[in-house]
Length: 393
Image (cartoon, rainbow, N blue to C red; front, side, top):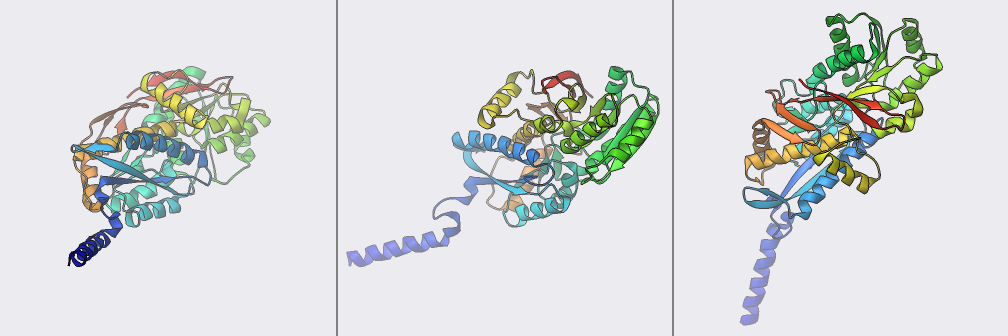
C-alpha cells in the first residue's frame, strides 16, 4: 500500500510539473524580464549594431551577476533578445513585430539609425510596446507616439549647433551640403541645417546636393559643390559614406574644412578615412578622449572587454538600458502577462523627468525626447575624437 501511495505521489508531482513545463517545472517565468534589441548587425552599418550589443552585454552581465534587477523588493533576471534589422527600414519593422509577437518582450531598445527607427517606432507604438531609440535624432521617431522614447538629442537642436560652430570656427560666410536623400536622418538634418543657416543670416547655402544610400561615386555632386566655392561642406551622412566623400573631394582638389554630425562618431570612420579626415569636426553625444567619472569607467571597461573605444551609439545604448531599467523599477512589479507589463513599463518611462547617464544629464519633454547638451569634437592627428566644446539648450 505504501508503495502504491508513493507511486501516486510521484505521478501527481509529474502531472503538476508537466502542467508548468513551459515555465521550466517550477521556474517562475515572471522571474525573468525579457527585453528585445532591434539592431543593425549586418548591412551598411554593422559596427553600430555590434557596439550596441557589446554595451548591452556588459550591462546584462552586471545585473545578472548581482542576482538580477530589484523590482518591488524582489530580484529578477534580465534576458536580452538580439535581432538583426540588416540596416534596412523594412527589416526593422519586421524585427519589431517578431520581438513583440513571437518573443513576447516587454520593451524594445533600438533601432539606432533614424532610417530604421522611424518605421519601427510606428510598429512599436501601434502594438503598444515601449521602445527607446538610443541614437535616432529625427523628430518623427517619437512624434505623436506615446510608446516611443529616445536617448539622443534631436536634429532641430543639432542643426543650429553645427551652423553656429562652423560660422564661428571657420569664419564661414557660405556653406554647402551633401546628404543621403533616402535616409530620414541625413535628409532631415540636411534640411534643418540649411533652414537654420539661412535663418541666422550667416550667408547662402551655395550648393545642396543629394545622393543615394548605395552610391559609391560622388564626383558629380562634389564637382558642383567645389565649383560653388563654399567656406565649408556639411556632410550629415553615415561614416562609411563620409570616408568616400571626403577622399573624393580631396582628389578633386577641395582643401577646405568639413563639418559632420553624430553619424560620424565611430572609430571605423578613421579606419576607412584615415588622415583625410584629420582636423575636421563633428557634433555628437559625448567625447571619449578626456572623459571623466562614470563615463571614463564605462570606456575603460569597454576597451578592456572588446579592445576598442566605444562610439557614441554604444554609450547611448548603455544609457537607454539604464532609462528602461528605471522605468521598470518605477512600475514596481513584474507581470507574467507581457501586455500588462508593457503598459506598466510605458507608464514608468513617462514618469521619468530626468536621467543622469554617461552621455550627460537629460530632462524629458512630453514627446519622450531628452533635452540635453551636444558636444563638438575634433578629429586629432592621431585619429582620436577630442572634445572641442559643449553646447547646451
